[in-house]
Image 1 (cartoon, helix red, strand yellow):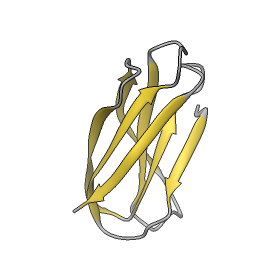
Image 2: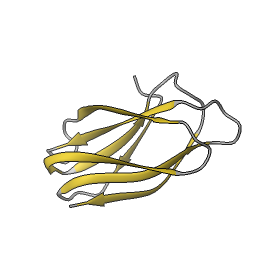
Image 3: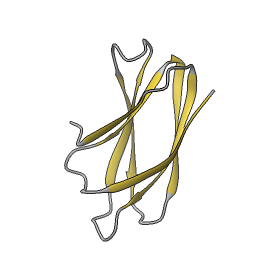
Length: 94
């Protein structure tokens, strides 16, 4: 289940996605985020099994290693784990 999904529409070859995240305002801590990736420019998507938990109201950096050949990336907020989260400074790297 995803509560929200942000797909980065930049085709390329990526090995790492990095972003900063923080819980918004006084919302409950503990929101969970995962990454999905596509090896075929968005036709099909694979869910990374790794979850991160956002437990701070200050921005913290999260980094996911992607499989070789990743062409697109999406950041997915899991439904039911919180209300609002700030996601900033998204970087796709080779």
